[in-house]
Each structure stands twice: as C-alpha cells, then as structure tokens.
Image (tube, rainbow, N blue to C red; front, side):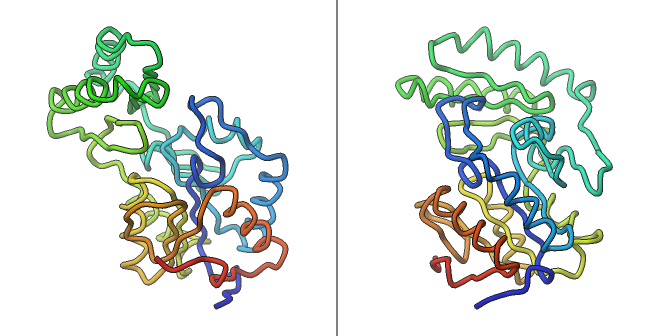
Length: 249
C-alpha cells in the first residue's frame, strides 16, 4: 500500500529509530545525509513531520543541525511552527534534589545519570552488572517523589519524569494543530517508551512501526534503525510512503 506523503502526519523517534543506539547518550552518530532526508520528508509532507523523543529539543537540534517540529522529554516540551513551549526546571525542585541524590547513590563506573532538566534517566548499558541497584535507585526516587512523577523503563535505562509526560499525548496534541490536523498519523519508534505512542496512533486509525525485535502494539515492524533509514530515503525520494516496505507485526 502506497500513501501520498501529504495525507500523512509523520512522527519519528530519535534514538534507536533515526540513529543507532550508542553506549553513551552523547555518542550517537548521525549519518551525514539524515538531516537532508528529513528536510525532504518535511517538504513532501507539507510540514507535517515531527520528532517525538525523550531527548531535550535542544539536544535534537544539536545532533541534526536543523530545527524540526518536535516533542522533547516525552512531550514535556514542544516546538510547533517555530514556537517553543519549554519545560521549566524551576517547576521541579524536588526532582532536582533527587538527581543530586542519584549521583551520590550510584557511583559505580559505567552508570550514567542523564540530567534532562525536567526528568532524569539512569543508564546502565556500560555497567550491566549494576542493573539492579540502578533500577532500584530510580524506582526509589520515583516513589519518594510521589504521584506527580512516574518511572518509565527502556533499553537499559530507567527514567523518572512527571506523570503527565508521554509520547502518545504529545502526538495527540500535534494532531490538533495545522499542518498535522486531519492527517493520518504514522509513528515510528523502537522502545518501551514508544508503546504509548503506538497505542494512540492505532486508536486513531494510523500506522505504528516498531524498529527491532520485541513484543509491541505496533502494527508494522522494520528490522533495525539502519534498515529504517534506507526506507526513509526511499520515501523522501519518491514523495510517497510505501507501507509494503514494512513487515506487519
């Protein structure tokens, strides 16, 4: 099935979807032609392309060198049509103290505390033997912060973030505004953190795509981020989205 790009609202995760997962958050490599591919897709979708990521928007901009529409920090901040709606660090004083506590508690080599301002990620990819204490510390912090926060698990990471954050809600909010309104949503992601987005897109009659293996609510699947980048280039060159390039889940 081939769909004209101008009928779609295209939502793309970053880590594990547009770029390969790296040992450290700052070590991901952006292929040289990726920004131009995304620019072309933004053109053929008449602007309806947004990044939906757990990363801060400023970090996405630094990696890609271009300011795309984006929902950062799982929707805690957003940029639409050049207007940025930021997340205020000052609104999270207890989280800030909790991040300092995590740094004191988790001092094992290889544990990475990723301070995102309004959320925090605890990574143990470089210290798999310390997965359990890292996970437990993140869960303890979330419990201490109470019902205003929650914990979210991903690939060798646990993130503590405000309870209302979520990629599904971010996608739904974009679809209320031009140029995304009245489009069929297509969301591509690779992790547990993307399942909420898959659920919303499925409910709205769109297409959800899981990158990589693992159980998922997504309706379609592609083997790897590298394979998906090839598909993206094909879509950009053709100006149409060929869903036949994706396996069904």
